[in-house]
Length: 428
Image (cartoon, rainbow, N blue to C red):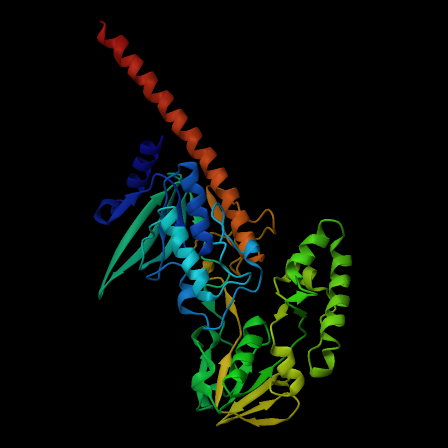
C-alpha cells in the first residue's frame, strides 16, 4: 500500500526525484522542545520509529537561548516532569533554568532522541492523492543551505505556544533612541544598573524582569494596561497550583476560583490599590478559556508596595528618551523591555485550515485538541503548560503506535499471502 501511494506521489510530481528527500517509516515531529521530546520518548517506548526536526542547534532552544538567567519553574517539579522519567530526587521543588535544561538533555540521551538540528520547516501539507504528508525543510550547515523533503504518513506539530516573540506596534517607539529589547533577549538586570527602565507587560515575565531589575539597582516602571490575576506562589507553605489541583477533584471550577481569590486576598491583601486590577473572570476559568496565565508572585509585589517597582497605565506614545502614558503623564526612561509575550508560528508553515485556526492553535479545546485528521497531531497546545504537553505526548504516541502496528500486521499478512502464492505457482 505504501509503495502504491508513493508511486502516485511520483506520478503527480515529475520533479520529485530531482530533489533530496526521504521516506520516513513513522511520524515526523516538528520541534525539539519539551513537547517534541516527550512525544518522541513515548513513541520510542512503543517501538515506533520517528524523525525530530529542529530549526535551532540544540534541544529546548526557548529555554536555552530566550530566557532570563534567574528563571525557575513556576510550578513544583512533579507537575513539570515529562513522561517515563522523573526529575532527579536531589532537584529542588522549583528547579532552576539550568537544572531544567540539564533534565531535558538527560531525557533526550536516556531515550536516545537525536533531532536533526538546523533544519527549519518551510512548509508541510497533506497530499490527498498519495496519502502522505510532505514536509519541506531548509538545512543550514555553516554558510550552506540545502532544501530537503520528508515524506511521512503522520505529522506531529510540537513547535509550541511560544515559537515567536510578539512585538507590539507602539507609536514613536522607533524614535525613542534608547535600547529596546524583547524579554526573550533579556538575561540579567546587571547591564541596566542605575537606569530607568520601562517594562511593557505585567505577566509572569514582566513581573520577574521588573523584580530582577530592582535587584540590580535599576528603577523599573511596569506597564499594566489591563486587569491581571496575581496569586502567591505558595499558600501557607503549600503550592498554590497543587492546592488548586487538589480542590478541583472535589469542587466545581467556579467555587475553586472563589476560594483561590479569598486565599490570595488573605496572603497578599488588596492589590488593586497598587494599580493591579483583577479580572471579573476567575484565574482558573480565564486560563482555561483564554489561555491567560495568572501571575505567581515570587517577590515583585513586595517591591511594588515599597515603590521600587512603579506601576503605570498604558502607553500613548514614545518620543526621544521619553514615554507618554494614557493618563497624560510623561516619564523619562533610558531603556525598554517588551515583556509582551509569544505566539504560535504554525500558520507560517503548516498548509492546513481544518484542524488549526489562524492564531496557530487547534480549533478544538482540551482534551480534544491533540488529534486532527489524516495523521495530523498537535503536542503542547493545551494552554496547560508542561503537564498538558505530557498528556498530549502519551495520547499521540498511543494512537500512532496502534496505527503503526495495524499497518505492520497487514503488511506481514500480505507478504505471507504473496509467499504462499509463489510456492503454489512453483509447483506447476
